[in-house]
Image (cartoon, rainbow, N blue to C red; front, top):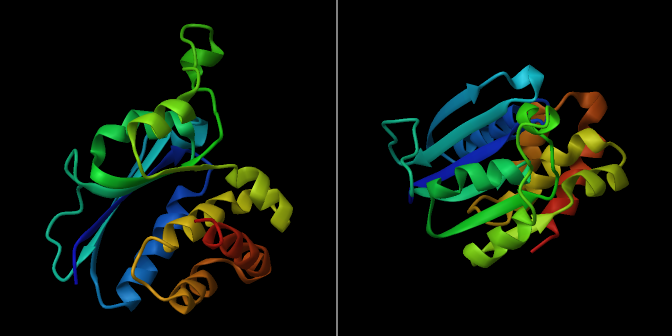
Length: 191
């Protein structure tokens, strides 16, 4: 049972917390010791949301050291760029190709960087950039973009697909479960 460190980064309202709870549920069901740390900096106003999920046979700290994350799951591309230093050499970078402008950009005090996706792909060999929002819309609900990303992440982790389905059933409200199952399958199908 190897240690797995996953950093989930996004902006308030994107569903990073639900995604981390689904992930933790799967790891716990598989017998891993799980530690989770959540930071909600002004999340309701479009601020950064960062969740660190660490799992292994025995995990003592919930915090991932810089340069140690096996995977960064980014719900917004500027957040991927901001947290890139936390990815270890050879790690995976999974990025929703969505731009949500922070307040300084909206106020005209800063510019949103150009071609973040191109930069990330050039810098990190195992980078997948996808339109999770568009994929979720195709599945029936744009708010399921987080579960599209969870599906993409699931392909890189050592847990059976049925464990993910069980976690979805346990963590997603019943009235949204079917659309989230579709969203998960869409993300899971992307290699």
